[in-house]
Image (cartoon, rainbow, N blue to C red; front, top):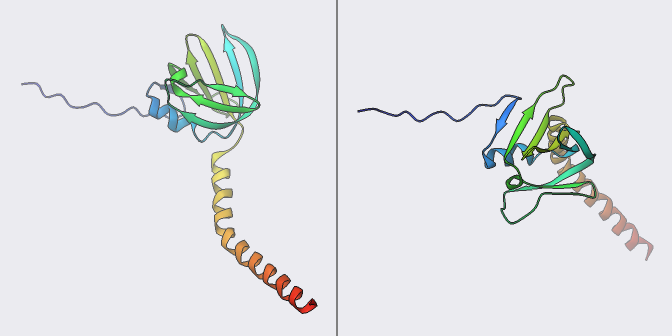
Length: 145
């Protein structure tokens, strides 16, 4: 009797190929601001900068890069190739039949998360200060009458 031990899930660190659509979703959904290039046969056809607005997995919808916004459907691609070039900026190559949509993040997820945390901490203080200022204005208005 042969026992088959299930294989471990892949572990990718900075470089590799991702074929699982859920893994592709997780990697792409928090990219934020990116530069993008459409590469065919080794030649750049279009390039620009934009913001990843939505990442989804839907066989009936398109991937769209329009008006500096990116709507990425992982079903539009066969796989995602992760590169770590010498310049330190990772590259996310979405590949289908030799056509590449290359995304290079322009925002830093660590600093963005830190800014979000600081905003969350300051929000209650800001709300209290706003309430105090508005209350003071209301009281001044009543005194003027």
